[in-house]
Length: 463
Image (spheres, rainbow, N blue to C red):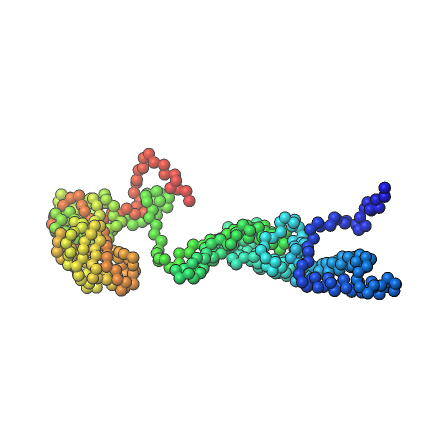
């Protein structure tokens, strides 16, 4: 039995077994190059042989054996030629791009944590740009540019310590090594004509946000200083566009808890000299078209200060109620909806026509454009149970809004009158106009005792 002469140790130090599935070179150019190399080797071989061994045709057995060896040498030469190009990032074969170039950019990343990128060209350009950024140093602009290499989103890196002197900032010197990464992307949708429409930055997630976060984590490991800590966030911004225009309004209800907290002096009554007692209402309706009573609640007290409905001490004839009445409700129109169209005029604009009266003081005239009305416009109905004057409040419909806030000529045919009528629990002495009065309102800041029993108010005091 022949002795096995295979060496027990490899000839080269740190040698590893050959890859059982090496990269195979294919294509007509490779085949042609290989044949040319084999022909050159065989030509050299025939030149060094003795003349009695040289055949005129490539047929002898020894010639075929050497041809097989020449083909193996040709494959090795082509493989070494390709391997010599792997050191250049522009010519590295895709199969070896990460092993030859990627590990130089990310030396501390294991093989199962390399960036997730589709496409050889994209991966190649990414690695080339990362090499350039590494040479520029770990600055904030460098980090922002690196984080944006694999996305169309807008990425901003905030240095918290830069805001330490901002009085509205909660960051200080203790945050000198912490940073915020804010990722903003756009929302895209298809328009009515099939066109692609993009929203503003901060309205959507980037494509594959989890893959992007993973890739950006690897990029930061390569570009950031070791002492820096980052908060990675997807930032969204409120974006209503031109859907509507509005102003903030805060209704603190109930007011007495807020009054206890703030102890501020607020308005507690309305004073005016344009009050009118409506004759057709059995003298229990009181109106003032120069303002509205939306802040007056049932139970408020109305006091007449002059005229026949005032007390005797104020020159009036009311010796029973002394000019003081309790409000039971606040009305827009005294008798509600009607089935009959009523004629009207307005002042000071001078609009006129016929309106249909619906519930809750809503009026409609299809032949009128109430957007031409001005602030303080008073509409007067001349016939019917609701005859009288009413202050216009808001325009109705798709183009509606507060009076004088909607552009003139908007074609608004519906309008609602303001709550300018107080219904009282007692009759006045006689009809009268131009009366001075005051009425209490339910508003923040009325510094009067208010007792609440059996209620937990602690939730009202948390900031």
